[in-house]
Length: 588
Image (cartoon, rainbow, N blue to C red; front, top):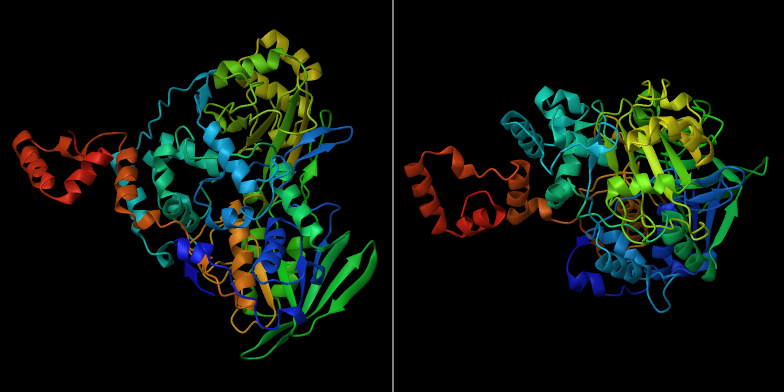
C-alpha cells in the first residue's frame, strides 16, 4: 500500500489483484468503516459481493451514523457529523455510490450540488443571557501568550506530547478565550483530553481556522446521516450480494502467532443466544472494528432520563480479549476505562408547537422551515452551566418528518452540573426537563416554559458512556496499526485503529480511511490511498491561520513607524510580501 495525490492516482483503475477470486471476507460490525471496507473490496479489489459477510450485533447497519424514528419515543439522532471538502477517502468512496434522491447522480454529486446551492455558515455562533447574542463577533480573543502556546503545540513533536492532557500545555488565558469556546464545543474536547489529538486536529484542519467562528468551511448532508450516507451505501452493497447477518455478537477471535507471522484462525460469536463461529484460513480475510463510541448508549424519553450504562460493553470486551493475545493489538483500557471522562449526553427535540420554531428563528436569523441552512452548525450557550450547544440542520431532517415539525439536536459537555433553570444535572433529567433548560436558554417567556416543554415538544435524551474515548491521552502503541506487522489475513478498522497517515479521529473520513488502507494492504491493490490534505505544509494556509488567530491584528503594527516602513519595503521586494499582504498579516 502507498499514498498518493493528484488526478494520476485518483482516476486510475486498479487491475484485479491476484488470487482475489479464492478469497472471502468477514467484517465485525456494520458501521461506516465496515460498509466502506466492503465497498472497496468490491470496487477496487474486484471481489464478488457474495464472498463478503458483515456480522452485526444490532438489527440494522450504520453504527454511530444513526437516525431513527423510535416508536413511542420520537426521532433520535445520537450525534451529528461535520464534513468538509478535503475528506479525500470519504468522497473517493461516495463518488461511486448512487444517490437515492437524484437519478443518475452519485452521493458525492448530490452533496456537492446541495452545498454549492445552499452554502453553510452561521449567523449566530453563541448566545448568553437567555438567547441574546454573546458578542463573540467572530473573534478568537487569544492573548499573545495563548497564541504562543498554540504555536508551540503545533510545532512540537508527537512524542513530546504523548500522554499529556490539554490542560498541561495551555494556561488560564487560553481557556478563557473564544478560541477554546469554539474549539471545545465544535469538536467535543475537554480540558483533560489528549494534547496529542489536539495537535493532530490543528494540523489536519489548519485550513479551517478562519472559518471556525461561523462554520463557513463546514458542509452537511440533506437529511440525517443514516438516511443520507448509510442507506445508499447499504443498498449498493446489498445489490452486489453482500450478506448482512444481524443479531450476531462477536465474542473473540483466535490467532496463530509466531515471531514473524500473525494469522486470524477463527471467529467466535453468539447468534440469537446460541454459540457459533467460523474457522478462517489464509484466504479468509477478517476486518475487525475495535472499540465503539456509542457502545452501551441508553435512550430515555420525554418522561424518563437516559441511564448511564457502566456494565459489560461487548465491543470493548472483544477488543480486550484480542489485546491480551499480542502487544501489537493495542491497549483498549487507555480509551475505554474512563467513563467519567468520556461520557456526554445528547437529546433530540421534535417541536410540536409553533412558538418554539419562532424562538429558533430569532436566534438563527433564518426561517427553520425554509428547507435550507438554519443554524449553520451548533449554537453554543456560553453561560450555560451544562455548556449546552444545539443545532437545527436543514429541515426536514428525516424524510418521514411532518412538515410542521422541527427536529433539533442538543448536547452538553458538563452533564454532572446543575442546570440554570432545571436545578438538576443533565444526566438525571427527563426529555421534558432538558426541553425546559433548552427553552430557558432560547429566551422563552418564563411563564410559558413548563407548558411548552410539556406539550410543545417531544424529546429523547441519549447517554453515551464512551463517546469521547478516543480523545483520552495516549502514546504510540495504544492503538493497533490498521494492519499489524506480520498480519497475513486480518486488519483493524474504525476510530481506534492507527492509520499510517497523519489523520485525526472522530470524523467520517477516518472511518473510511482505515478500511481503505486495510483492503489495499491485504490485497495489494495497485492504487494509492489518497493522502491527507497537505494544508499543514501550505505556506498560504499557515499564514491565513496565523492572521485569523491574531483577530486581524497585523504583525507590522507592533514596530515603530520607521522600522515598520523598512520591513514592509523589504517584504514587498519578495514573494513573501505578497503572501503576507494576502493573509492580512501586514497592512496595505
